[in-house]
Length: 280
Image (cartoon, rainbow, N blue to C red; front, side, top):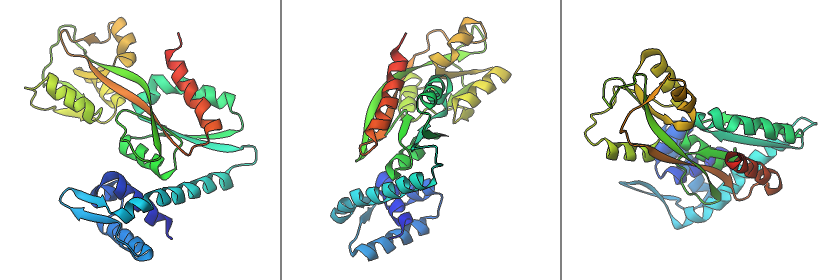
């Protein structure tokens, strides 16, 4: 059985859409359809029912779900083991949003490298769909993100709650469409923003990561919502200013790990991240 067919099946099952799966896998929709047809021919049963909402698993598709995940996971484990240099005994892949790596996870990452000298680490920056797919496929061991989706074989652990505050380059600024830089923190933030600013017509400028938005703000002026922990020192130094009366939005961050992980290896790393965030 072609492993790419199993990956494609998992992507369709995760997104509920052939179109969304094609976008996630960076292939055409016809390629996704052809792979699913080939898989259905091999298994002798339909795996999805197409409807207006997208694609829903059939009973047979639901039963195949765990087998597809096991196949992809087994291949990734084999790839990790076979490709490891002799001085390493294991490989751990860690992925997170850029804003969570920045000022939050880098010190922890350096610490676990020092405490696990015989482990080969690979780090990645990604957004929720890519991180979730890598976890579903078994290509990633630890994912840290804002809005994970609950999926079979994945375990979600609360990490922290970010406070997003509106800051400006001007001390007397108010919330104005002109000059506002909208960072794409995900659907949960967008819902809170729309509720907090129902009359807002829409941003003239948006950025998909906080670093881009913050650099633009520093160079050109303006305002935007950023995690308090990232801008606190700039507020203290007078480089940025909180906008008076602006609502503060909360955005929970989560650790996502696989249920079939190497618990003896992965769990102490996860615990050290969680403990490190609450330590004085």
